[in-house]
Length: 542
Image (cartoon, rainbow, N blue to C red; front, side, top):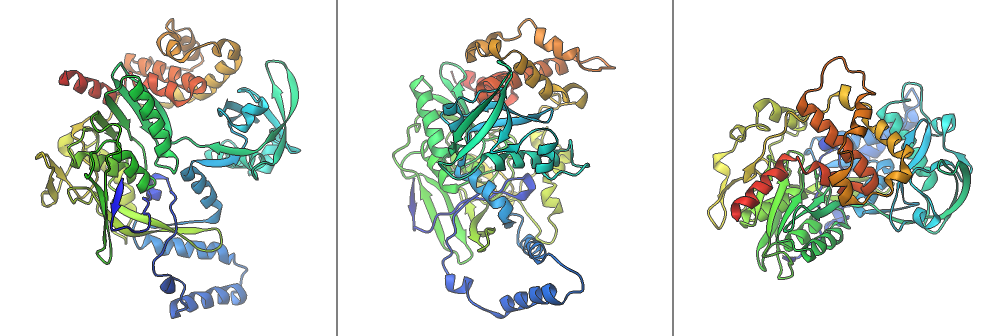
């Protein structure tokens, strides 16, 4: 991917409304303006000093200032956001695609920290940690029972809640994470041998995958799922792409559903794998009218392949850049539902105390010149944040004809396809949301606990399964499924569709525990309406 009119790297952010903040780099052109002393700056400093020293009650001025910054940014646009220092490290780790730790995934089960998986090549695998191990002590910190509740500083109302679970998880992570090449001494209880083992683990760099799965759906159709565009995403994607090409792939499903965005340059590099040399990928424009254009190169390894991009109402930002670039260049087919509609570009700016702001500095446009930013009112963000509810009410998640378009924002691709700006990417092939695939509490509330207990009780037996055999053969006799059903307190029958969905999801969760996300998607995609639509389109081209 090449850039004309070189400028500092620009990265895409995603709204707090859908729960994701992402990273970029700070590079502000006019530093003399940014750091100058002026009347407004002096006014704020004086006010903080008055409150701190003269206000009648004791006040946490740090918290007060955080609130003031947040309220100030809200008045700009929905995507300019403040990130407190407590959150910035976590956000940065996610978007850099790595952190320093011991390399395990865990959950809390009956007040114990249970390892659910050990990351391949990580410090814990090297030290001999196994899935199912209970971590009971880390550097003399007790991590079970009342001790972990106390360490997480939970009050009685938070115990058993989502917030309480998050606090416990953070407390465990704080005990396990640390500086590179430092040692954490842990005691684990291994149920299979009924013993407590002391294991020293040297902390190291642990990868956080953003390409969660890739595999061959059939002999010629591959599948890659990207859940965000992190700093490591392109390398992960390229590894998957090369492997699938080597297996005979000539058509690809690129799943961007639920992907909230990420680094713009990473999205551009991925697009470059599909577009021919010289094709425009995206361009940005700032308030002075300066335009930066990004073009594809001749380095793409899938320029002659067929690509299907899956999007939905939660595909945003960099995801929309990918979909828009391919759609506007008449490359492949966009399948699904109208995307989120975020066309603003943010840069991260350090505030000097470990916190930062992500400030909108420009807008991006697809190759045909359309902005896909949906309308917003900076005086009232409630409607913007409730957009998903509005889509439910107007019927557009079920009927394509219910998608509203602005005739004044109509554009045409080189091959004559009509596309629209002003509110997300409208797919070429619409697939309605599956209203029958709902997750009722009466059927699903006990599922995660059952899956954990089943695997924990049958670890030796489950470890013998190979992925493809598991997908095709596991529980074909419904013994495990019936075991779960018998634990439910049902006062009404399960409809056939509900039963089939529940059975698939149960098997998929077990597969996820054994084979990570690839196992999960290989099972759920067999009944996924968008995947089925792609298979229909593939059959039609032959």
